[in-house]
Amino acid sequence: MARRRFGHVAAAGAAGVAAGVALTLVPVTTAVLLIGLVAAVSTALLQQALP
Amino acid sequence: MIFVIMSYGGHRNQEGRHWSGKAVAFTVGATVSGGSLGALLGLLGAALPAQPRVGLVALVGFMAVLAGALALSPFQLRPPQFDRETAQRWMTRGALSGAVLNGVALGAGFTTRIGFWLWYLIPSAAFLTGSAWAGALVYGTYGLARGLGPWALVAARALKRSRGLDFEEAGDWLVARIRPLRVAGAAEAIVLGVALVVIAGP
Image (cartoon, rainbow over all chains, first blue to last red; front, side, top):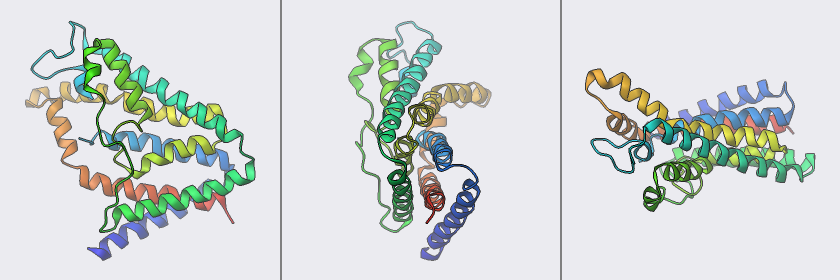
Protein backbone atom coordinates (compact mmCIF):
# COMPACT_ATOMS: atom_id res chain seq x y z
CA MET A 1 0.00 0.00 0.00
CA ALA A 2 2.83 2.42 0.95
CA ARG A 3 4.65 1.54 -2.26
CA ARG A 4 1.48 2.26 -4.23
CA ARG A 5 1.09 5.65 -2.55
CA PHE A 6 4.74 6.44 -3.29
CA GLY A 7 4.05 5.47 -6.88
CA HIS A 8 1.16 7.95 -7.02
CA VAL A 9 3.34 10.77 -5.66
CA ALA A 10 6.26 9.91 -7.98
CA ALA A 11 4.01 9.75 -11.05
CA ALA A 12 2.32 13.02 -10.12
CA GLY A 13 5.71 14.64 -9.53
CA ALA A 14 7.00 13.50 -12.93
CA ALA A 15 3.85 14.83 -14.62
CA GLY A 16 4.33 18.11 -12.74
CA VAL A 17 7.92 18.46 -13.93
CA ALA A 18 6.79 17.84 -17.52
CA ALA A 19 3.97 20.40 -17.18
CA GLY A 20 6.30 22.90 -15.52
CA VAL A 21 8.96 22.55 -18.23
CA ALA A 22 6.29 23.06 -20.91
CA LEU A 23 4.99 26.13 -19.08
CA THR A 24 8.44 27.76 -18.94
CA LEU A 25 7.79 28.64 -22.60
CA VAL A 26 5.26 31.28 -21.45
CA PRO A 27 5.66 34.13 -18.94
CA VAL A 28 5.23 33.21 -15.27
CA THR A 29 1.95 35.16 -14.98
CA THR A 30 0.45 33.31 -17.94
CA ALA A 31 1.64 29.97 -16.54
CA VAL A 32 0.06 30.76 -13.15
CA LEU A 33 -3.16 31.75 -14.94
CA LEU A 34 -3.24 28.44 -16.84
CA ILE A 35 -2.53 26.42 -13.69
CA GLY A 36 -5.24 28.36 -11.86
CA LEU A 37 -7.74 27.60 -14.63
CA VAL A 38 -6.93 23.87 -14.51
CA ALA A 39 -7.28 23.87 -10.72
CA ALA A 40 -10.55 25.85 -10.96
CA VAL A 41 -12.30 23.51 -13.39
CA SER A 42 -11.09 20.26 -11.83
CA THR A 43 -11.82 21.34 -8.25
CA ALA A 44 -15.36 22.35 -9.20
CA LEU A 45 -15.86 18.95 -10.85
CA LEU A 46 -14.41 17.05 -7.89
CA GLN A 47 -16.56 19.02 -5.45
CA GLN A 48 -19.72 17.71 -7.12
CA ALA A 49 -18.96 14.52 -5.19
CA LEU A 50 -18.98 16.23 -1.78
CA PRO A 51 -21.85 15.01 0.39
CA MET B 1 -27.08 21.94 -4.13
CA ILE B 2 -29.42 20.53 -6.76
CA PHE B 3 -32.27 20.62 -4.24
CA VAL B 4 -32.16 24.41 -4.33
CA ILE B 5 -33.10 24.17 -7.99
CA MET B 6 -35.32 21.13 -8.13
CA SER B 7 -36.82 18.75 -5.57
CA TYR B 8 -37.19 15.05 -6.11
CA GLY B 9 -40.73 13.80 -5.58
CA GLY B 10 -41.80 17.09 -3.95
CA HIS B 11 -41.96 20.82 -4.39
CA ARG B 12 -39.74 22.22 -1.64
CA ASN B 13 -38.90 25.86 -2.40
CA GLN B 14 -40.44 25.56 -5.86
CA GLU B 15 -42.97 28.45 -5.67
CA GLY B 16 -44.33 27.23 -8.96
CA ARG B 17 -41.23 28.39 -10.77
CA HIS B 18 -39.58 26.37 -13.50
CA TRP B 19 -36.21 24.97 -12.44
CA SER B 20 -34.36 26.76 -15.27
CA GLY B 21 -34.96 30.26 -13.82
CA LYS B 22 -33.52 29.19 -10.49
CA ALA B 23 -30.63 27.43 -12.22
CA VAL B 24 -29.78 30.66 -14.11
CA ALA B 25 -29.91 32.64 -10.82
CA PHE B 26 -27.66 30.04 -9.17
CA THR B 27 -25.13 30.01 -12.03
CA VAL B 28 -24.98 33.82 -12.29
CA GLY B 29 -24.62 34.15 -8.50
CA ALA B 30 -21.77 31.62 -8.42
CA THR B 31 -19.92 33.18 -11.38
CA VAL B 32 -20.21 36.76 -10.16
CA SER B 33 -19.20 35.74 -6.64
CA GLY B 34 -16.08 33.88 -7.80
CA GLY B 35 -15.20 36.53 -10.39
CA SER B 36 -15.48 39.40 -7.88
CA LEU B 37 -13.31 37.63 -5.32
CA GLY B 38 -10.77 36.80 -8.01
CA ALA B 39 -10.62 40.41 -9.20
CA LEU B 40 -10.08 41.56 -5.62
CA LEU B 41 -7.32 38.99 -5.05
CA GLY B 42 -5.68 39.92 -8.37
CA LEU B 43 -5.70 43.58 -7.37
CA LEU B 44 -4.11 42.71 -4.04
CA GLY B 45 -1.51 40.63 -5.86
CA ALA B 46 -0.72 43.56 -8.15
CA ALA B 47 0.36 45.54 -5.09
CA LEU B 48 3.19 43.04 -4.62
CA PRO B 49 6.39 43.62 -6.67
CA ALA B 50 7.12 41.02 -9.37
CA GLN B 51 10.17 39.44 -7.74
CA PRO B 52 8.62 38.48 -4.39
CA ARG B 53 5.52 37.35 -6.27
CA VAL B 54 7.63 34.81 -8.20
CA GLY B 55 9.07 33.68 -4.87
CA LEU B 56 5.53 33.19 -3.60
CA VAL B 57 4.72 31.11 -6.71
CA ALA B 58 7.46 28.67 -5.69
CA LEU B 59 6.29 28.68 -2.05
CA VAL B 60 2.65 28.00 -3.03
CA GLY B 61 3.86 25.22 -5.34
CA PHE B 62 5.88 23.64 -2.54
CA MET B 63 2.88 23.86 -0.17
CA ALA B 64 0.64 22.23 -2.80
CA VAL B 65 3.07 19.33 -3.18
CA LEU B 66 3.28 18.92 0.59
CA ALA B 67 -0.51 19.06 1.01
CA GLY B 68 -1.08 16.58 -1.83
CA ALA B 69 1.51 14.18 -0.40
CA LEU B 70 -0.02 14.42 3.09
CA ALA B 71 -3.49 13.79 1.66
CA LEU B 72 -2.14 10.63 0.00
CA SER B 73 -0.27 9.58 3.15
CA PRO B 74 -1.77 7.22 5.76
CA PHE B 75 -2.70 10.37 7.76
CA GLN B 76 -5.05 11.42 4.89
CA LEU B 77 -4.82 15.02 6.06
CA ARG B 78 -8.00 16.96 5.24
CA PRO B 79 -7.93 20.64 4.24
CA PRO B 80 -8.94 23.28 6.79
CA GLN B 81 -12.53 24.20 6.02
CA PHE B 82 -15.94 25.11 7.38
CA ASP B 83 -17.35 21.59 7.32
CA ARG B 84 -20.92 22.57 6.52
CA GLU B 85 -23.43 23.03 3.73
CA THR B 86 -25.13 26.26 2.77
CA ALA B 87 -27.65 27.64 5.28
CA GLN B 88 -31.01 25.88 5.26
CA ARG B 89 -32.77 29.13 6.18
CA TRP B 90 -31.96 30.51 2.72
CA MET B 91 -34.52 28.06 1.37
CA THR B 92 -37.25 30.10 3.05
CA ARG B 93 -36.24 33.39 1.42
CA GLY B 94 -37.92 32.66 -1.86
CA ALA B 95 -36.93 30.47 -4.76
CA LEU B 96 -34.80 32.97 -6.68
CA SER B 97 -33.17 34.55 -3.62
CA GLY B 98 -32.35 31.11 -2.25
CA ALA B 99 -30.79 30.09 -5.57
CA VAL B 100 -28.71 33.31 -5.78
CA LEU B 101 -27.50 33.03 -2.16
CA ASN B 102 -26.51 29.40 -2.64
CA GLY B 103 -24.75 30.29 -5.88
CA VAL B 104 -22.83 33.13 -4.22
CA ALA B 105 -21.73 30.85 -1.37
CA LEU B 106 -20.67 27.96 -3.59
CA GLY B 107 -19.00 30.25 -6.15
CA ALA B 108 -16.84 31.65 -3.35
CA GLY B 109 -16.26 28.13 -2.05
CA PHE B 110 -14.65 28.81 1.31
CA THR B 111 -17.82 29.38 3.39
CA THR B 112 -18.84 25.73 2.94
CA ARG B 113 -17.15 22.34 2.66
CA ILE B 114 -14.01 22.52 0.48
CA GLY B 115 -13.09 18.84 0.53
CA PHE B 116 -9.94 19.04 -1.62
CA TRP B 117 -6.57 20.70 -1.00
CA LEU B 118 -6.61 21.58 -4.68
CA TRP B 119 -9.16 24.32 -3.95
CA TYR B 120 -6.51 26.46 -2.26
CA LEU B 121 -4.66 26.80 -5.56
CA ILE B 122 -7.58 28.85 -6.96
CA PRO B 123 -7.42 31.93 -4.68
CA SER B 124 -3.62 31.55 -4.61
CA ALA B 125 -3.40 31.61 -8.42
CA ALA B 126 -5.86 34.54 -8.60
CA PHE B 127 -3.61 36.48 -6.21
CA LEU B 128 -0.36 35.45 -7.90
CA THR B 129 -1.50 36.56 -11.36
CA GLY B 130 -1.21 40.10 -10.01
CA SER B 131 -4.00 41.23 -12.31
CA ALA B 132 -7.67 41.92 -11.61
CA TRP B 133 -8.91 40.48 -14.90
CA ALA B 134 -6.72 37.37 -14.68
CA GLY B 135 -7.75 36.81 -11.07
CA ALA B 136 -11.40 37.24 -12.06
CA LEU B 137 -10.90 34.76 -14.91
CA VAL B 138 -9.41 32.08 -12.64
CA TYR B 139 -11.82 32.38 -9.71
CA GLY B 140 -14.78 33.23 -11.98
CA THR B 141 -14.13 30.04 -13.95
CA TYR B 142 -14.34 28.12 -10.68
CA GLY B 143 -17.63 29.86 -9.85
CA LEU B 144 -19.01 29.18 -13.32
CA ALA B 145 -17.97 25.52 -13.21
CA ARG B 146 -19.66 25.09 -9.83
CA GLY B 147 -22.65 27.07 -11.03
CA LEU B 148 -23.11 24.72 -13.98
CA GLY B 149 -23.51 21.74 -11.61
CA PRO B 150 -27.33 21.79 -11.54
CA TRP B 151 -27.50 21.95 -15.35
CA ALA B 152 -25.25 18.90 -15.61
CA LEU B 153 -27.30 16.96 -13.05
CA VAL B 154 -30.60 17.88 -14.71
CA ALA B 155 -29.12 16.87 -18.08
CA ALA B 156 -27.92 13.60 -16.55
CA ARG B 157 -31.40 13.05 -15.19
CA ALA B 158 -32.92 13.56 -18.64
CA LEU B 159 -30.42 11.18 -20.19
CA LYS B 160 -30.94 8.50 -17.55
CA ARG B 161 -34.70 8.80 -17.28
CA SER B 162 -35.14 6.01 -19.77
CA ARG B 163 -33.14 3.75 -17.44
CA GLY B 164 -35.16 4.76 -14.40
CA LEU B 165 -32.37 6.79 -12.79
CA ASP B 166 -32.63 10.35 -11.47
CA PHE B 167 -30.36 13.12 -10.23
CA GLU B 168 -30.45 11.84 -6.65
CA GLU B 169 -28.94 8.59 -7.88
CA ALA B 170 -26.44 10.51 -10.02
CA GLY B 171 -25.42 12.46 -6.87
CA ASP B 172 -25.19 9.26 -4.81
CA TRP B 173 -23.07 7.66 -7.54
CA LEU B 174 -20.59 10.55 -7.26
CA VAL B 175 -20.57 10.61 -3.44
CA ALA B 176 -19.83 6.86 -3.39
CA ARG B 177 -16.66 7.56 -5.38
CA ILE B 178 -15.27 10.24 -3.06
CA ARG B 179 -12.23 8.14 -2.06
CA PRO B 180 -10.70 7.70 -5.55
CA LEU B 181 -11.62 11.30 -6.30
CA ARG B 182 -9.68 12.43 -3.21
CA VAL B 183 -6.64 10.52 -4.54
CA ALA B 184 -7.11 12.19 -7.94
CA GLY B 185 -7.40 15.63 -6.31
CA ALA B 186 -4.28 15.07 -4.20
CA ALA B 187 -2.31 13.82 -7.22
CA GLU B 188 -3.38 16.88 -9.19
CA ALA B 189 -2.30 19.18 -6.36
CA ILE B 190 1.15 17.55 -6.57
CA VAL B 191 1.29 17.90 -10.38
CA LEU B 192 0.29 21.56 -10.32
CA GLY B 193 2.50 22.26 -7.29
CA VAL B 194 5.60 20.81 -8.97
CA ALA B 195 4.73 22.78 -12.13
CA LEU B 196 4.55 26.00 -10.08
CA VAL B 197 7.95 25.29 -8.50
CA VAL B 198 9.47 24.59 -11.93
CA ILE B 199 8.08 27.74 -13.59
CA ALA B 200 9.24 29.90 -10.66
CA GLY B 201 12.71 28.58 -11.47
CA PRO B 202 15.92 28.89 -9.49
